[in-house]
Length: 200
Image 1: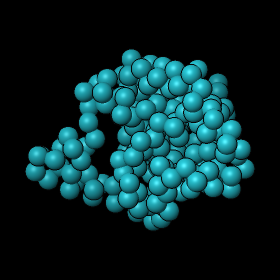
Image 2: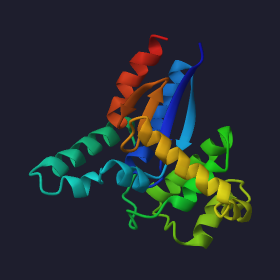
Image 3: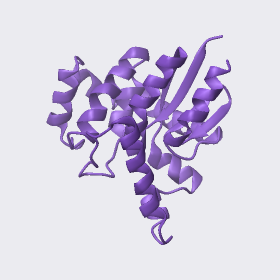
Image 4: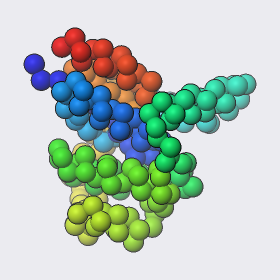
C-alpha cells in the first residue's frame, strides 16, 4: 500500500516552515510521499472563525509565552537554528500560493524548498516583486511565467476551492495533515503521523 501524507500548506505560517524539513525526513524514513495542497490561511480563518494564536490568545495569561517555549523546543529538537521571524509577518501569501497551485509534484516541492528559506531564514519581503523573482530564477523557475500564472482565473479559483474543501474536511489552521481521511493538526503531531504510517 502506498503511503501518502497530504500537507495543507501556506507560506505565511511559520509552523509550516518549521515542520517542512522534519516532515520530509519522516516521509523518507517511512517510504511515504508528500502531497501538497496549497490553501490560504487567511481564508481558512475567515471560514472557520479562527485567528492567529498571537491574536486569539493575547488575553490568556501565559498562553503565548508557552507557545513560544514549545516553538523553541521544536527548533532545538530539529536543529532549525536558521529560522527567524519574517519582519513583514503576517504577509499576504496569495500570489505565492497561486504559484504553488500552478505547479505539480516535484515542482511544488522545489518551489517550497526555494521560498521557505528565503522567507523564514533570509527575511524575504514577499511584496518586493524583484526580490521574489530573483529567488525563483535562482531556483531554476521562469519567474515571469510563474508571476503571470497568478492572474489566471482558473488558478485563482483552484486556490479558493482548495481552501474551502480543506475547511469542509475539518481543517482550521496550518499545518494540517491528512493520511487518508485521518486529520492531524500542528507540527507537534509528527510522532502520531509516523506511528500511523509505521503500521501501514
